[in-house]
Amino acid sequence: MTRKIRAAAAIALIGATALVASGCSAGSDASEDGGKVTMTFWHNSTTGPGKAYWASTVKAFEEKYPNVTIKTQAIQNEDLDGKLQTALNSGDAPDVFLQRGGGKMDAMIAAGQLMDISDSISADAKKSISAGTFAGYEKDGKTYAMPGAVLPEGIWYSKDLFKEAGIEGTPTTMDELNDAITKLKAKDIDPVAVGAKDAWPAAHWYYNFALRECSQKTLEDTAKSLKFDNACWTKAGEQLEDFNATKPFNNGFLTTAAQQGAGSSAGLLANHKAAMELMGAWDPGVIASLTPDAKPLPDLGWFPFPAIDGGKGDPKSMMGGVDGNSCSAQAPKKACTDFLNFIVQKDNQEGYYKAFNAIPVNKEAQSVVDSDYLKSALAAYQEAPFVSQYLDTLYGQNVGNALNTSVVDLLADKGSAKDIVETTNQAAAKG
Image 1 (cartoon, rainbow, N blue to C red):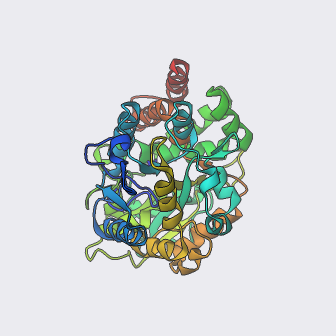
Image 2 (tube, one colour):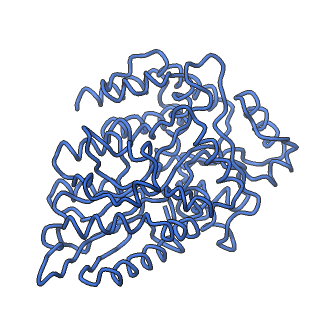
């Protein structure tokens, strides 16, 4: 969420790390006594292979660094941002935690809550992770997080349900997407699953329409000004209004969760109850956790968000970005940065892919990606002229929350495209 992912779940938001530190602040937990260090680590993998991965990775780190003990406890993804902000503001922050970047990270930097790790990034990490990937976590020449996972967004779909509906190929334009939706409805198949109960998954539709309607410059300038006065923001909402009018979403989507249980939007796709879901590249792992046999969905496919007519955004641009981990300002620097460097080593990143069915950030580890859908997503990501961070992250928590809520209001026929812009501008003006 995530999200958002968002972007951001049982095995969701790949690369996202969040665990509830067991009641102690970073300052008191990160105690050094005779060379012994205890750290707290927050991650959001609450079940299955993802949770097991972090447990084994922490154990391996502790074996390599016997003077360091790491306390971990998972937080459900949808609860993470709120709990983390409360912990940071109260001085009770975990030592290591998920960093989504964007305006949310900028606010933490301004409050003095993050550690500058620039001089502690290992040579191996600098070699295996692209400079462009690190750029998302840099501000004023300093680096505040270690990237962990590549998160391109697109539409995940069931090849079997597409075949059943007589859909050939994948949609490349909105007209083609609408045609596919019509064919799915004719077969009594819910076309698109969306977890609007959690707000951000529904808002991702607006983000992507905005990415097509608005230029790269507008998106980047808005991150600085937080003024949504360009006409493209309203046009994006109008695109969403038109799309919503076709009734593309699953029955009861306004009360559907995103990533928890078989009835969630990811669960509907996992169990062939819906044909498509718009989501970031953590989704395959979530879907796999919700299939009847808890294995990857055999007929899963992926395609980019379709092009629209007349927009100023490049049709190959993508929503997405990178998830990573930060050290809090009060964390024990050597132990914390040693851990950040450790988790992005090639073997650990290969294990990450196997656990999360998601794209690792280490370029050398990306060779283990063997699923066609992630290969397609990674290729599109690498070819994209512009990749925008999810807008609720890019524009900060207050603006992001207002944006997400107003999008859901539109989908519930309680608001309009104009309302999205007005509500978001009001939130920005409040600071």
